[in-house]
Length: 265
Image (tube, rainbow, N blue to C red; front, side, top):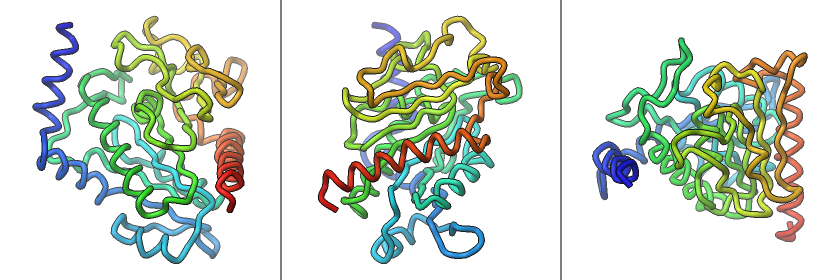
């Protein structure tokens, strides 16, 4: 009970309440990195969040992804993910958690070590929910996928159902000592794809061992664990690999096609 009160207090003091909390979430949205499908050699265009309404009024991507970055913020991982998704016709919006006025450090990537700011999970879930609600309002008929890497993967796994059409969890085991970090909150029947390296250096602690498949329900939910001798067994950023990118795209585009058929488009 004490830990629950502690987490609640940390959330209240850190994220703020009412207008302050809304302002902080707005900042993460306003600073989001947006990658949109586009004509030309690059196959994508960078937009601002402020340009999304106009863009979506004129374009119809195959799906929309809300992408949650890792504990060290928006990075080349985020950019590379946005590029390969946009080049396949998927609009990607990555809110910037570090756009908050107060953003405590939650990890040390150089060690690597996480868990330095326990309440960050609630913050990241709020950011993902805020972005998803914005995108639903802007493009209510488009398939919406939640995706995250590392701390963003934890966010994607644990966020309660918010009306998304699927989830992609990269670089997370769904196992943790803190109960709010453990498990999978996807509803039964919601497509889920999780990807993790069996020897990922971020998960050396025994309490972090495992994979998200332990919490999955039904054939729509799939866990892939890369084991030796695969070169991905010890990797944390798995989607730098083209085969992994294809696996993710196949998953997202299958959801997109099925969703559009079910909605009569």
